[in-house]
Length: 141
Image (cartoon, rainbow, N blue to C red; front, side):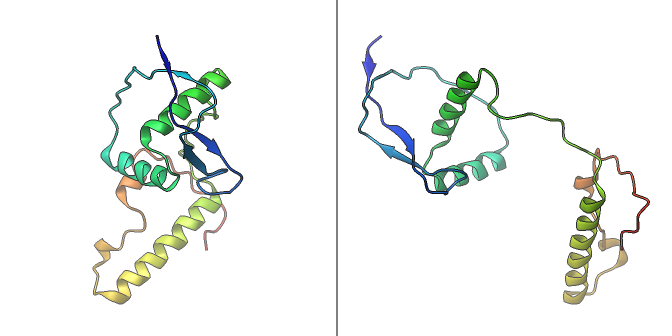
């Protein structure tokens, strides 16, 4: 297999896009094997659009980010971050924050238009699906 020089990314010390900004350069001091493998994945279109927007702000294409991720998987011999199950039981501060946020939203809606009680939900149904809520004994007010 013939090795070929490709553009690569290096990090500087600025703090854009997380810890460091990535800059593309065509000056390469080493050669790499030609990229000839393809990875396909089905993902939500909204996730792809949002991730592409974030990556573009960092100067990256999605394929560059995937390549960087795979390099980190190899370097760490596993995922380069901890994976934990989502905590489906909100804490007291989370419940209080949700209550304040939804009350603020409800007050804005009520001031703007005449709204029936049925339209004044504190939490969106999609947010509650699958959640197990244990109400704390402390007052939420």
